[in-house]
Length: 422
Figure (cartoon, rainbow, N blue to C red):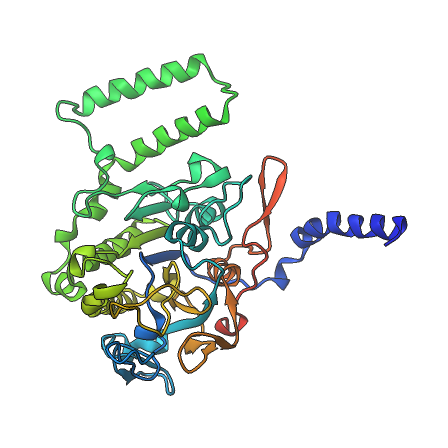
């Protein structure tokens, strides 16, 4: 490459992000969903034992394959594991994306980060999570509600990264009581609270122009917490308002989290992550090495019960087309069994699930080989999967955000699964 060629190439590289940002909106795929309920299966859900079943294997004989039998679904040619009985007749409203893939297999933290921020770890940029980007781009769906709520495990993978505290999550410790930090301490009645707020206002009046962005974010967090501590938002956590029959249909603790997620959507929350990693069921959660696989079916059944109830509940309330349900995990599991009869990790091909959200569902998208180990057709990168979620929410997946003056693509240049959009 001579000097002129080098300068031309450099000029094109510099202009490309600007061109991408300047593309007419009509060229983008834009869905009409308003909310996301993202279910996180910590540990690594095995696709071959759930949403991409293959021939039956045998851990004792070291024959690779599925741990369970498969059953047909409402979509011809699409089968599920036998423990997903409730979801099977509802798969016309669901798409199991069977060909998601990334390069991390042996490190849970790195894979968790990748599946929350949509790209590998960088040494120079702290990337925002999917939830924080949607909070940043769409905000809350109603005044008096936070844009992003986390029911599960708070850590940097779920956080706002370079976007700052304004786009972080509200963390719940108790699904029945709501955030402890939003409840007034005993002895603080309405009059005393009003005096405190007037005092805060007078302090702000004395220093109107705050130069530090971190302090401005802190002030914004105070304002939001005062708004959220009111009775309207806190009522979302009163699950006892729901009929007993509906609560029972959702099932146990995880199901009640999903029910709460639906109520939070109704209150105006844009993005809710619900963690399902209840280790006491099998001692290992979804990370089914060795004997952890023996009770894996209990986790699958809990997921099945709660997700089917959530689909029905949203549909009955005419909210399903406006609410995108997403199910993700760090990676999948290989078809081979380990020395203890369980499974290791697999990032080369695994399943992530989409339901509702106004998408054109097809039961399953993409195809893996006879053991769900290699991708045969329609690979979907993590950025592609994230771009699909962004597109469903009407977020510009080709947009660039900025870490200072550094442009950062929203989805690491992912492209939505066009077949899922009518």
